[in-house]
Image 1: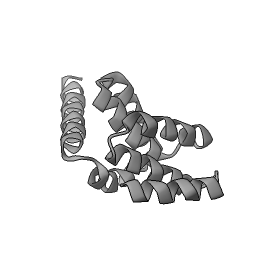
Image 2 (image 1 turned 180 degrees about the vertical axis):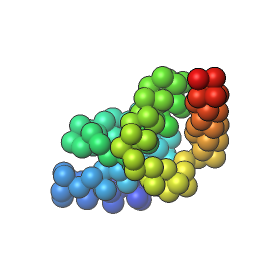
Image 3 (image 1 turned 90 degrees about the vertical axis):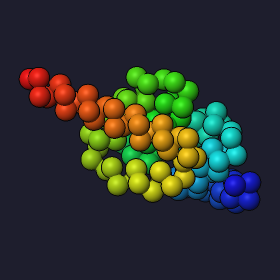
Length: 121
């Protein structure tokens, strides 16, 4: 992760509009346990492109990890509304095991809640 971070940082310096390098940099920071820095980097990327599902999904995980369930839910809802959920499976490979389980459990619980509410209606 440190080598990936250094390379991605250099790429971001060369082209500040390179979103892929910024995301790669955030992923490396996350892997190194520097979630706050990853969060800040993703917020910058989001400010440039507020409809990017890969950024929103990563931010959702970081919010869930902090215990901010409402914020995490809102970000996941945005990903679903955009309609580009294909980013979720590759991102799950990046997440650490405990965070992957957190995201899977959270999404499963929310899906069951939604289904239950629809059945009641």
